[in-house]
Image (cartoon, rainbow, N blue to C red; front, top):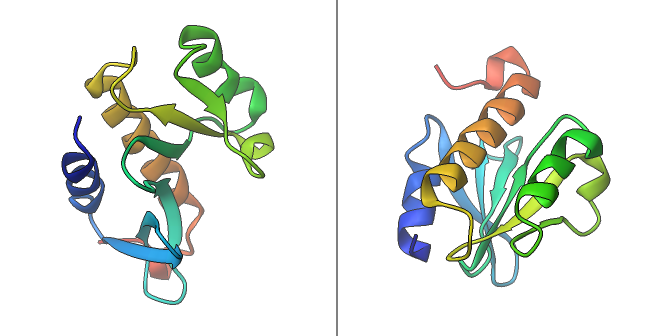
Length: 117
C-alpha cells in the first residue's frame, strides 16, 4: 500500500478529514473541526497508528501475529493503540480492516451529535 492510497482510504470514511496537529505528522480524524478525534496516525505513510483493541491485551494480538511489523504505539499504546508497518508482512487488506476497526471504535466514542450521518 502506498502512502497516498493509505491516506485516500482513510479519508474515504464518512466524516473523515485530514489534519496535521504536529509539524509533519498527518492524521485522519472524524467528527467536526475542533472536536474531531484521530482514528489513524499516518505520518509519512510508512506506517499507520490505529486503535487496535479496547485495551492492551486485545491489541497485543497484532504483536503476536506480526512481531516485526506491529508495535505498541508510543505514549498511547497502553490504551490499545498499535503502529502497523506498511509494506511488510501485514497484508494490505488487514491494514484496511485495522483502519476500519479503529474508525468504528473512535466513532462509537463520539457524542451522538458529532457522529457522521
